[in-house]
Length: 418
Image 1: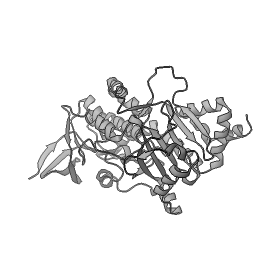
Image 2: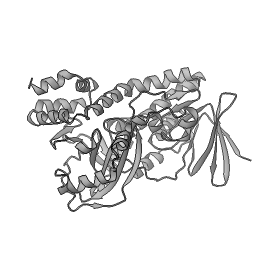
Image 3: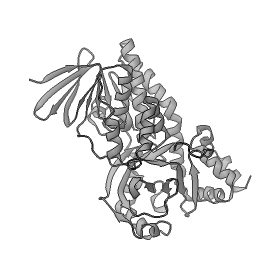
Image 4: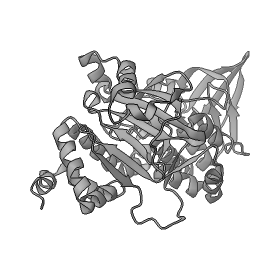
C-alpha cells in the first residue's frame, strides 16, 4: 500500500524554477513537497549564463547568498557584459552597467549548472520543505474534491502526495505540463542548442564578457563563448529547430566548422581542448504568451516556455517565475482559492507584466537577425560612434530604449548618421 502525504503545494522539479518556488514558499511558511527524478548534484546541459535577474532573485531571497557566490571564485565567474559579433565579424562590446564604478559587484555570472543547481538545492531543506530525490512520477490525477494527487516511486516505495496546488517545474516535456495543459506549444518556438566545455580558449575579455557570434550560417541563431571558472569556457551553438529541419543542418558539424575555420574564432582555439563531450538540448522559447496556470496548477521555467528568444537566457526567467509563483501561492492559500481565474490573475498577470514585453521585444530582435545587413549596419556604426555603442548598452537594461530596435526610424538615423 502506498504511503500517503497531504500538503499545501507539490513542486515537480528541483531545478532553478522549482528551487525558486520552494525558497520563497519557505520564506512564507507554506508547507510543500518537492519531487525530482535526479539525485543532486546533477548536470543540466545549458549555456551556464546567469543574468542580473538571477542575481536579483537570489539577493531578494537572502543578500548573503550573492556575497557567498562571488566569494567562491573556483565555482562562479563574475561577468560584466556581452560581446555581440555581427555576421561581418564586427564586434560590439556591451557592458551590463556602462556607469559601473571600480569594485562594484558584477550584475551577472557564469557557473556550471552542476554547481549552480546544487547550490540552490542545498538551500532548500527547511521545516516547510519535504524533498524526494531519485523519484519517478507515475501519475498526476485531479480529484473530485478539487485537489491533485501525485503518485511516484522512490526505490521500491510507492508514495502518494495530495495538495490543492501543483507547480510544474519539470520542463517543457515534463509530466506536469502534459497532464495539466496538454501539448499547447509551437514547434516553431523551439531552438536546439549544443554545448561543450573547452580549456585553453584565448582572447577572452578581461572582465569576462560573454560572447555571441551571429554567424551567417546560423542566423537567426548564434555561436557562443562564455568564460567559466578555472580557465574553462562554455562553447556552443543555438539555432531554431525549424531552420535545422528546413535546411537539413548538422548542428554539430556547424559548431566544429566554426571552431576550426571561422577567421574570427579559429585562432582562439589553436591550443584549446574539448574537456567533455558535446551535448545537446531543446529550448522552449517564449515567442507566445501562453497560459501558465489553470485549475490547481502553475507552470514555471521551461514548463512555461520562458526562455528568452534572443539571448537564450533561461535560468533568470526560471528563478523569477518561481519567485512569482510562490507569491501567487501565498495569495491562493490565504484566500483558499485554487481555481483558474484566481491563479491567472495572481500569477499569469504579474509574470507577463514583468516578462511579457521583454519576451516580445526579444522575439522581434530574433526576427531582425534574419537580415544580416541590418546587424552589420548597426555593428559598423557602433564601432565608429561611442554614443550609439552606449545607447545599445543601455538597451539591454532599459526596455523602453530596447523598443527602438523595433522602429524603422532607429535604422534610418543610423544609416544617415543622424
